[in-house]
Length: 191
Image 1: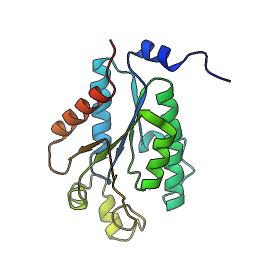
Image 2 (image 1 turned 90 degrees about the vertical axis):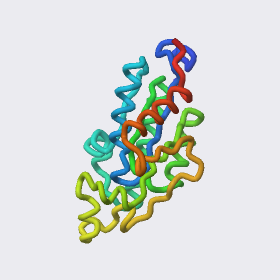
Image 3 (image 1 turned 45 degrees about the vertical axis):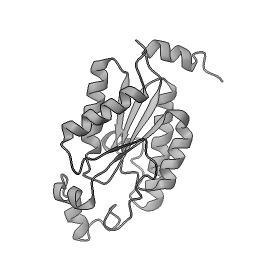
């Protein structure tokens, strides 16, 4: 059954269009920090938004999935579906996932249609490994995480992202300012 409320009515209600801000990059590149900072900044400006990340997805909806290639693809497929629903509801959905494979991100883009904005959180492997906030690279190098992205499994960077945030060479505050500026222009407030 079709919704009784259309996209135009939702835009009038929220003051902006629905969108998916898809942050992709290596572990330790700063995706989650940027996502949480962006959510806070957007809320202060009057946006209705929500962050999907590993903490709230892997502990519930995707708790049945492992970390092999097939499960990673299914994880991103499900996230793309949920993100598309958030955007269809009129919210700005911010996702913070490695999402290592081009094909999986292309499927998420196709599901989300015109409201999809792929943001490459660009930090090279050396920078991410030097940060290693969760000790995952150390475990991967020790053979404890054999399919870890960037070490035992590839990361396929975006070919034509809407925005590139250079977290490997700039301060988090500068990266957040760049991202916020992009979103404010890509998904403007109507109020």
